[in-house]
Image 1 (spheres, rainbow, N blue to C red):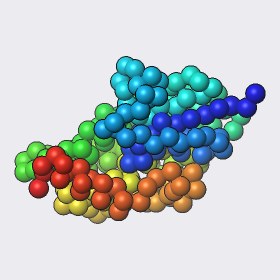
Image 2: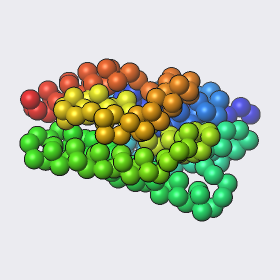
Image 3: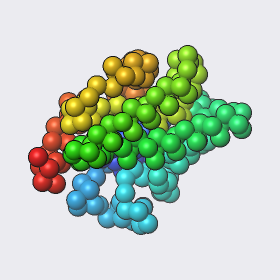
Length: 219
């Protein structure tokens, strides 16, 4: 029986992008079902009854929720090609740690950059650059966080690059002037088809954020 793979997704979500990249890296065919998060589908509510959020990976009728868990699941099920997590237990633990750091830091700080003003936004800018510099240290001289090949941390992090125009425009700063190594890494990732075809254009995400800000009453 052929695998039936469905992804419940929302195009600007960096979390959905992670799963898209993982599926593309493994060469897995799947059906992408775009969700309207203001009018969630019965399928989404059925497949993720706890959090009611995207992305949800559905494999042969069974749901896997939370993006990093879904990426690990993809790596374990289709383990015959393009490994995403290291085979060494210590390196695997480190990869999970830094992916968790991205979840807890980059996403939270990034949101503050386009929703806050004044002192809160200034503090978020400093926190953002500090976090990116920490990640630069982890990258070191490697091509990717995964080494010579794109890996788990790269997949966790690179989707946020599609939000950088929004972060930088509303935060009034440039990441590249402070963290050139990080931007060079992001551009290397974007040269990979699995990444470039999974991430929307920064301009499109920026326009989406402009509309979000209007709905939220942020001027």
